[in-house]
Image 1: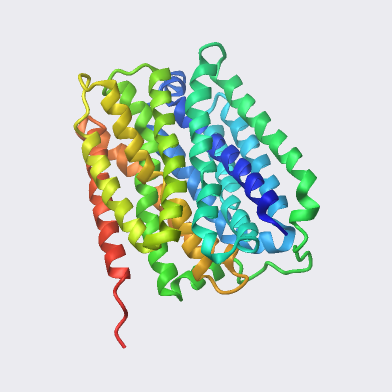
Image 2: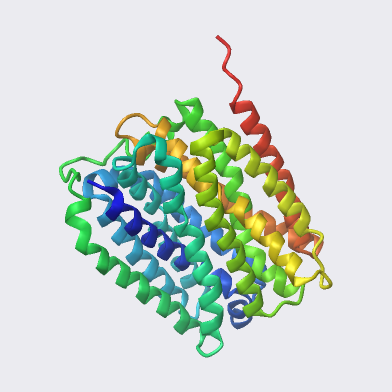
Length: 394
């Protein structure tokens, strides 16, 4: 089966769940005012979301094998829609429950797409193809940053969330057209009891290459989600940007991430390999976070845009190279399970990162403190990558 069907469909699904996840953070200043809470609490929302995603990723690989990648993706889209609708209710508890639903919907999407692409893509093209699929993450965030603030100009924020939920439902319905073709390898009689929860983590820890990729993704995800979660609020509160202008700036970082994912995937396949490519990206993240701490009201917008474009290319552009390397290193037929296992560490980084970023920013009274912490995280990740390239002693 050609990946002419698999690649575009998985890209669109990835974009929609990413848009669903970022819809509330993009509107954080407005929603926080309605609930009379600090906008910095958006980090807690993101942590709850990714805690749900972490749980879902543990069983995602086994569920994909049993029900098929497209069916699991449809369930994910519907859970994201439900979560968005729960967030429109005027109680902080339903917002937390909505975050859980969105996380449960988001978690199995990447193992599902890895399962499809691993069996339809030649190994020498994996970094590029996986990077192309992973452009769905910044594409969805770009759409959230560009469309949602614009909708807010004429609609209540609750209606804006309902609109995004409706698009998720529509995407799930359309994907049914290709379900029989793309889920032809499903195993309905496969049992998912017992080992399905712990097997992905055991698989990762049993292979040094997978373990190093998991550790790398833990730290990279801290940088990525802290940037995308707090950028709008940082620009709005610290640099006095309007909400629409801040949302468009977020879209610039996502565009940089989209371009970066394609470029880094090509460079990794053609010349550098995954480990060297990721090491360079760690250095770029550290420099981008450091430069962000120097921004002020007087910084020309052109400089801000150029910086965010480069920062986004690294902080949001690493995922495809990482996921392709995981799929390459996984035992035959275990790509979805290995991906689910490494994503536990990825999502744990997201659970930890934004709340710590928000806490540091609140403690020091500026979001620059959070970006300073990201410099340290990126440097530590670079050290891990250097260590991982050393050959183990005999």
